[in-house]
Length: 335
Image (tube, rainbow, N blue to C red; front, side, top):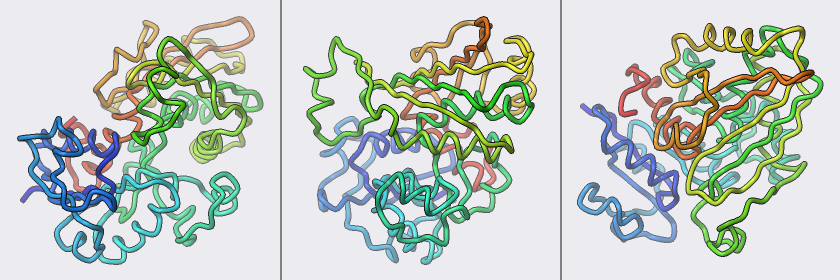
């Protein structure tokens, strides 16, 4: 029997991407899709690219009914709204992969400080596995709830965490400078993501206050075992998808060659993380679950460059990878 998958909040870009990937998955089948605003419509009315490929009618969210027909649910709801839904689904006995930030951080105080809402399921803050199989595969395999990583954090945690754990870099002065495609802002209409606003332009946003900054720090601290001081600045670029992160760190008498060797050892058994000699670009990984990373010597700094697809390894591809681990399949299944 295939893994029966439900998609909650099925109208956005991440939901479309996860549906597209699941349609080609050899061991999974999407059996349900929900949306509060589009109940009764065919999924192809919302996502025309799915016409003739996935025939399902969008339904309202009834946790008991969804749990009854699904082995796992992908929750593509925004933060705050997602946690309550995840709680209901887990209590009904189905497993959940949550795309929101509701369970990523290690403390309730940190979450409520950065997201400005009271968490509806505080018992699971710091008690939910973070969905990076490169570090947490054993925990993911047995989890009832997985916190799918943020897109920007994925592009920073994967390069930084092994270097911090190995003591190759200083932890008091890390700068992460990232560029993202417009799909990272979601599908809802916003003035800042209109074509005339983003075309032929690049702009910083969330300067000094972006919610992915504490996620980067929190996870590198957990993996590396030491406190990290990190400054993160994201930028919006006129492309559909992709993230390029340039990371500036101070070496501890280490070189770019030693950084590459550390990554090669750390990720030798990880099918989606590839240290490369060339400078990565978003087109090199577009539409894939792969991460490309490289390092360069830069005087008193090391310069790390990573590229991911924000909709794939940064969201939906990561969710499929986590689902594969949860159900004992090869991580690469359907990817």
